[in-house]
Length: 477
Image 1 (cartoon, rainbow, N blue to C red):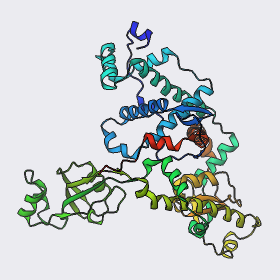
Image 2 (image 1 turned 90 degrees about the vertical axis):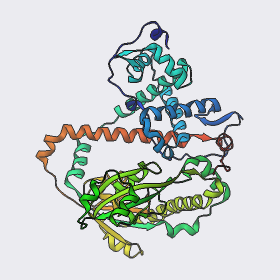
Image 3 (image 1 turned 30 degrees about the vertical axis):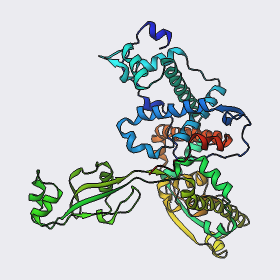
C-alpha cells in the first residue's frame, strides 16, 4: 500500500463505485494501421512517436480485464465475447498518455482516498488493510504498488474526461437552435446513393485484408449459439391453468401427461430471428441465460405461454484469417465503396441551386428520394440507418439548407431541411436551464469521443508483433 495508507487505515463510507471511473466501453473499434511502424523490434506500436513495449501493453491489457471484472462481476462471463480487450488496452494507453500531456496529476492521497472507499476492502464499515493485502496478492495476483499505480492511471483517465467535458459550451443562440430542432421539429427530404453502385471500383488485395484482420481480430468470430426445447400452450387451451400449476413435472413429463408436443429449435445466436419462439425478445434473452439442461418457468405471451429447456450451447469462437477472409473482403469492399459513394454524391449535389426542387433534381440523376416528417430526435432518423451519425451531419441545418454527403449503412446520403416548425417560446424559457444541462452533458460526451477517435487515428501498430502476441488459435475446436 502507499506509505500513507500503510501507516494509517483509511476509514470512509462508500460514496463512489468503480463504474464511475471506468473508461466508457468502445467495442469493436478500428485504427488507422501503418505497415511502417517503429523500427524498435520490442515496440508493439507508437503513441506520439514513443514506442509502446510489450510489457506496457500487457499491463494495460490486464488492467482492462480487471476493470471489466469489477464493473460487470458475475455478468462478465456472458459479456466478455462482446468486449474487444485488445482495443480497450490501447484506448487506456492512449488516454493515460494524453492525460500526462495535459499535465494532469493524481496524488498519492487521491489514490488512498479512492481505495479506502471501495466496498471490497471494507470490514464492518472500516478499511481492512489485512484483507486489502490478501485481496491484491491472492485474488489479483499482483503487488500492492502495481495495483495502486493502476488505480492512479484510472483516475488520470477520469480527470481527463472531466477536463474535456468541462470545455463543452453552448451560446444562447446555439441552445435556442438546438431546442427548436428538438421541440419544434423539422421536415426532411433525403437522397441515398447505394454503396453497391461503387463496389466494382474497389479491389480487396490480400495485404489490405490481413491488415484489417490484425487491427481488430476480436471482431471476427462465430457467435455464441443455443438450442432450445420448448412447450407452447395456446391461450385457447382450457387446461392451461392446470398445466401451469404443475410444479414437479419436467418438460417431457408435462408433454406426456397433457398430450403436448415438445419441439426443438435449430441453434441460433442472439441476433438471429427465431420464428419458433414467436420472435419474442424476452424468450430469446431467457434462452441464453439457461444452463444446458436447465428449464425455465412458464413465460406468458400474447398467444399463450412457453416453457423452455436449454438443449445445448455452442461457444463463440475466434475465426482464423482464412475463415474470416470472405467476411473481411465484404467488409472492406463495403467500407471503400461507401467512401466512393459519399464522394460521388457530394459531387452530384454540389451544383444544385439553393431553390431547386430537391426530389426532382435527384430523380433526374436516377437517385430515389424519401421524406422524414417532424424530426425531433435521433430516433426519427432511423430510416437513414445510423441515427446518431445522421444527426451530427444535419444538426446545424436550418430551413432550406442541405447537408454535405455522409456515410450511412446503405451507402451515402444527403439531407435537406424542407420545413422548420415553430416551438413554444414560453416553455423554452421555463426549461432553459435543465435543457442546457442535458445538452452540455451530451456535448461533453461527443467531445470525449472525438478526442479518442483522434488519438486512435494517430496510433501506429506493429501488426506482426500483435499477431505474434495473439496468434490465431487454429487448433481450438
